[in-house]
Length: 306
Length: 306
Picture (cartoon, rainbow over the protein chains, first blue to last red):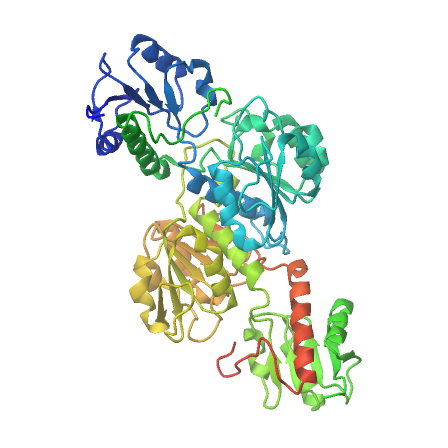
């Protein structure tokens, strides 16, 4: 408990993160046989991280930089505590989800592209039925932000355990039962085999023609080709997507120019917004490592994949 | 007190409004010498309304359909109670103000126009300094909506009477003192001689270069030519305008295409959103007329012009 854990910041050293490691009671050094923890600073290169872990069996804790850890599931190993930024970026991402919700309801994409005055248009958020897929930190914060709008919130999650602020909480199995009532569908769930292509042709056909879809989770939750057809044919009113499949969305893709679609480049939480929030998470987890593993925040459930 | 007031709905009869008049205890009929109240259904043609009032001295109450009554100040007469929709549309307009605030902070106009993936960008609303010009229903509702974001709200109004939810309330005379601290400037004040061109070159130069300007009030509060220069030269970060001067904004105007500007066509409250809200206001004021004038809502201060 009294020996400061030795932490390597990889693959690129980050002086700001080093200060948070030290604030948490750790020491920062190069990767060697004394290294007990790794802060992985990029959301990519899982193979490189896997090689680090294989070569340095003394490492007992890895901090990943994003909430979504789907790229890293292949290298999860026994005997290592994995923490992610799960929940750390809830505020910026939930805020962005609200920006996209209001933008889609109020036709801001079409207005931003317009070069002429036009008749009034748009739908109010007040009193609408909002379906939130996911029950993590982002979903909870989004529900808090829309609370002043007197919306009726239904949450879809793995278990039916009620989520605070939701009028109704149902399991994924009931998704298609509750979907037809939704005016707003917010995707805020992890990308797993269970959520892959949750929004497919069947789901899109089940939605209200006046409904809007917002995705700030992961692109693979949506069948992109089916969404394009749905937007073209008016099965739904609009979609606002901060994540896409494929991502980046290639130039020339119809989602760039459909009048009822808005694509933003995975920008719900920018590096500038995330840096201090990740730093605070790292500090807290270094302190947990120092305390023998008590108090880790953002623990990854290796079996669930998030 | 027991005789149902006879109300004319002009210049165009509206069957929905007639039902609200009757729900309030009035009778609806054509304009004649027994008419005691007028619901004016369009935000224009003040001369026609003035002629109606001159020819029918029995009219003691006029309901106007908008919150802003600047077009009608020339026909305000002694002996008539004027009520507007002041406050009735606070919810849709405040919601739209938040949509524009988040849209401007998160660079949604630029993203909507983009046809390629791009680096992350944008600013969070959490914790920012928000300057609200105006203290009416829209300002109050906007402050309620942004409450979850832990913003620091300063209100500028005619008097320094503190507004609930604001950390600080100052008078218009102190506007230029508080402006340099603002990250967001929301214009939500009536259009009067005092507020005309409140945002002029001096004000724009006093603002933070990272600040965004949102106008959901009236176009003349902003010096449009100065704003174009400010946006071009980066004196401020961006502007989102639901009202313009001139309005409608003509085709080819630079505000349509400046990358950091968003113009929406006076669409914060659409006719579909306003109809039931105006109806409720009419019902309440017919009831007040029936009760000898007790309980009017949205009374116009003829001297102040709003």
